[in-house]
Image 1 (cartoon, rainbow, N blue to C red):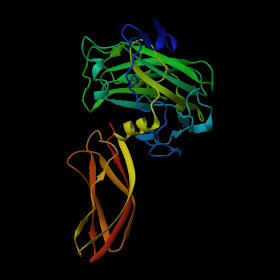
Image 2: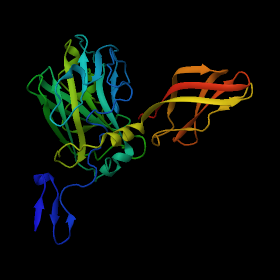
Image 3: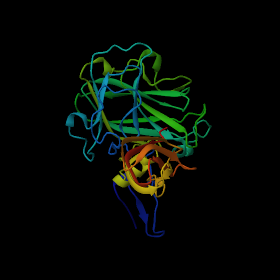
Image 4: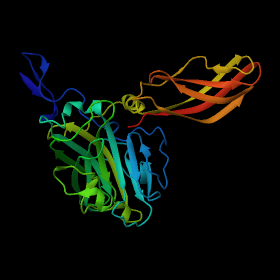
Length: 348
């Protein structure tokens, strides 16, 4: 006897083997925090007049050639999310801007090479993948995006249609893997997925095939930046092997946070110690990152408060990206205390 759970995408059990045999039982989604649940940097606050390199939520980054054209925010506009989701990423145009040919307005996620090595892109055994997501816009028409390699000399432009304004639309895009080009399979950038918000013609190309170009979107696609107050919201982003889009793979919040902390983490430290005058005071022990970071991170301190004969805070990453050591100068013998916020970025 056998039975299926959740129809064709579920699990089939066979009483002779007592094994699950049908659907994928392991992790399917190569996107991290595709439900836009993690926002370590902003904690839901808006990034107004966003600059290039802004992260409106973890793992999703905005690039632009013209600062100040978009406001970005988790759950911007407070619309109702698609069923099963509580968060989305919102982009709102701040002016009516006509893009120059060389302009860039793009939202992307870079996927680490380790997480897509099994796709075999760049070989004759390249696997087909399916990208799916929910999208909502005040505009209608044909929108665009692309897949790229790390050096952006291989691109596959895709397009999709939003027929009803201010309505969540489910998009499915299936592409054959690239059999050419160089695709990183280590801790570097494996795949870049772009959503075009109004790029110029230089960065848009014909859809449906791989090319040796730096394309971020599709020729003739809607330009969100071109309409003042236009909105573009997205959530439920999933990338998986095969030509079928399966239901979004939800992970626990704690698992998603840990995945994001490989690329960015932050915390607060308050240390009290005692040393002789003029010494370079080490902390009681190194500060461990929540998880091992992708590579040696860039460390930043803020809101530094010196108390009890202290000055000159310095942060040093250890020999591997698992911890860092704060040190500071003790002005005179006795107790010395420093508190500070820290952040560590090992983004792709």
